[in-house]
Length: 363
Ligand code: UD1
Image 1 (cartoon, rainbow, N blue to C red):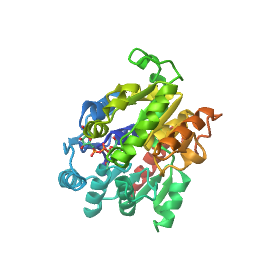
Image 2: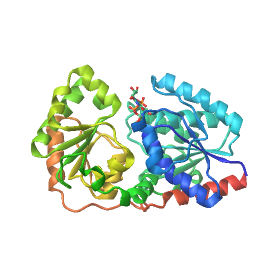
Image 3: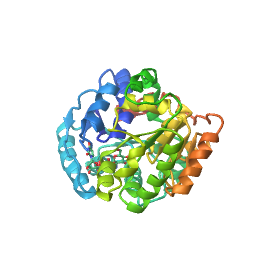
Image 4: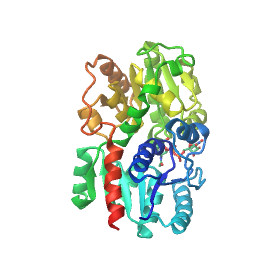
């Protein structure tokens, strides 16, 4: 049987491929080939995830680094094409919606290597988000589409994807969360942050639409300053955001918040699981807070993960200062942890591996 090849390259990818690698190892008796594109390369953005999640050394590291979208995607395609020609995988698996996902999908499709997309079908319906472009194109190219929620399947049907290609399997991020939760105790982080459990807000911010525009970033900053007057705010700062804050001279609002470098998976999960509320523009964190029952205020106008709003603990606040504050106070007043979406049960990767094994064996 030809080998399975799994691609990762940016922080959220590692969280999604870890359970797939494990499930494949259990089912097939050997790890899949693992290719790391190197879209993220700092220890805090990449290496710590390999350690925390027990990921094996990648079989190939493409080392592409940062660049404009075209430059980064092109570099990844050139390097990944060479890897595919050398290793001749029987099936390529991509996850999520980052540039690494798109680049590998295009290469596999052009080499006519069967392609599987994990976390298929999510749509924000906002094509100004680079991730939305990556999702739409990847799903059009994929032969197998693994969806985390029923709305994702509906989106794919509307776009004309044949239903036989689509498998509703649940959410692999929650597999990782469940596996790591026992290690993500508050004791991991207690000494580093002067806060008590359930008394602080956790903030993350990195979307270009929020941090690359002075108007959006200053509105968010105004709201966060007020939140920090109510409870301590812990803010692990993404490298993109750090750069923009310095560029716009907005560093002073950070005096009110507890700053830290980006954190590894386990430390960050420990902070999330014990927060009173999370404020974020991340996609994955909307899902993790829903699974953990922690209130989440999303600093965006749209979400590609609507079940976190309709069933979970998420509320969309946009980026205006008044709306963020209102969302924050509503989140504090909310009762009950919400519902866990269907099949977010920690076993999604096993379902995916079973389908992949069948398809690989048939070819
Ligand atoms: C990328 C993904 C986004 C994901 C996010 C998670 C795309 C289009 N975007 O955004 O969907 O939510 O990762 O973090 O793929 N940098 C470093 N060190 C690193 C990596 C990046 O300093 O290890 C800096 C560089 O200045 C770089 C900038 O961050 O230019 C942005 O990195 P990039 O990978 O282009 O996009 P992200 O904003 O991280």
